[in-house]
Length: 187
Image (tube, rainbow, N blue to C red; front, side, top):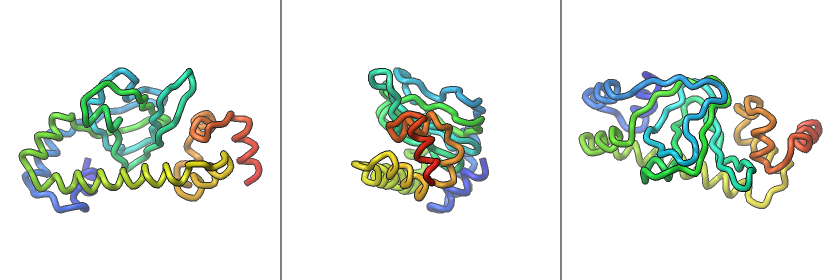
């Protein structure tokens, strides 16, 4: 929990009252490997901070998995449209490893923004961080071959590459596991 408060405090200093309030409303959750945090059709009612572990977000189309992202320790995690619009998700969020998460609900976050108006700045900085990440990913991977996509992941996210099972990485690259094995063998 302290890691989350420190991260938020590093963006813009939190008042003692806000720290205490966040401490009082933040809850802890353990998610086991392969357990779902969210399934398509559910409403994402909580935003999570990953204290420990690795998760992936994907959606299905014609029985094929399309990977949106992988998130690790220190990251915030939610199905963006589902959480902010409080509508049914098309995403699945699943633990790749055993995870420890801290979270607050959508209503609690809105109440924090209303009560502690300056905290909106922290929210904006975090939102921009993730928007830039998604834009970089979209531009970085668009039009690339599977080999180039793997090289991009190796350059941009080497710390999680070895933690991602072959099946998930193959889905991310849009290839099968045999082809992924060949790409890895060439490196």
